Image (cartoon, rainbow, N blue to C red; front, top):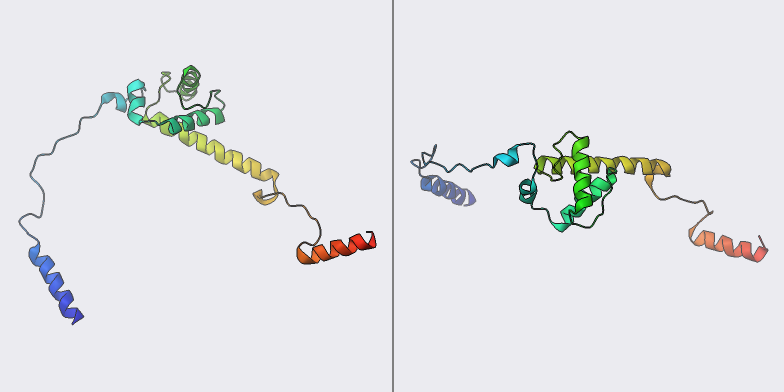
Length: 157
């Protein structure tokens, strides 16, 4: 019975498909216009506005700049110190020094910052055994350790 229902379902699907509508479309499509400023390497206020940076993402950019050694405050506002830090970062990477970011620069900055974080984590982990919390040997733990500690206290050890 299930095979019959399945067969009829497949037959209904095949029968409902119109072969006349299949194939390439001849309907003309609207081509989206591309802003030439977004394609160039030149970043501007307009290209930065197109990124739609929120206060949180601006702080992320500022933290990234700070991690990379570019002194700026992390306040979510691109003030003079942040613009100066962006300009220095652009100069160091061969971008035109505008103080504004475009999509490619924003991505490159965040990627470089993430790589710096990962490098910092591996350096930090080298200082600890196995990268975890430092463990201190304090004898036997648990109930046996408690009993041993109590006995040791009674015996004056």
